Amino acid sequence: MKNFDFHRFALTFKSQLLMGRNFWLRLFLIFFLVLFFAELFFTEVVEVSLYDYTTRVENTTNFCIVFFVISMLFGATGIFSVLKDTRKRIAYLMFPASNLEKYVNSLIQSTVVVAIVTFAAFFCADSIRTLSAPIFGHEMIWGVPSFLSQITPDFHATVTAPNVEKVQQWWLGFFFAIGTILYFHSLYMLGGTAFRRQQFLMTTLFIVLCFIIIVNVLHHIDFEGNINLLSYDEQNGLQVHPAMYVIMVCLYLLTCFNYWLSYRIFCRVQAINNKWLNV
Image 1 (cartoon, rainbow, N blue to C red):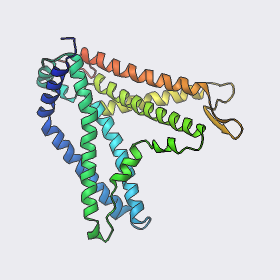
Image 2: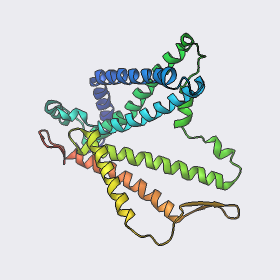
Image 3: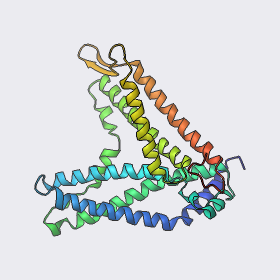
Image 4: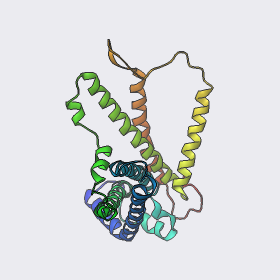
């Protein structure tokens, strides 16, 4: 089956989600315990003598955002964690669905479902911490609004911006941030598909190694002149170097390439494989 049928895809998604309900429940409980004890640790132990309770809640929210990002990257590398066991691998590959339907199904579960589980764990942990705050002599301050305000873009800023340069700067930063997030997600998705064992660890080590090599190579290259990607002066306003747009386009193109390569590697996955790579 090479075509994509939405009805068959919906049935596949429902079936895989129900079969993995024990895994999602276990993941939720682990995330909940980690975030709950982290919130208590940061609000009642570490920063008691340094900040007031409101600031401590905000700092705890920042930790939860970092945890959310790590969980998304961990979920990306676990896109095909079901393929580690040979028996489950054979059952998954023989499932009556096309490769594209299986890949999109795993992509949604490792991205959307992981995000929902992580946020639900944070919401429950923050709720219990807030409701139990009076026991420790604090007022009830929720961390969820601060969490949502930091992970969602402030579109109101584009309406109330005093000039066109501010709006341009906001949208440029927005698309660059989204491109960077998608690029790293695609890298971890590619690593989760290529590596068969220790996907998160191996992908992280590979990215760090590539980063060190690129930094050392650029360090030994003599550039003629300095290039300011973004500059601002009162006379000309915000100036964006054309290289900035080139970098953004390349970032999105590389992201699409990583997702495509991840899918192509998945199509070559074999039922019996004792190697470290699926290629």
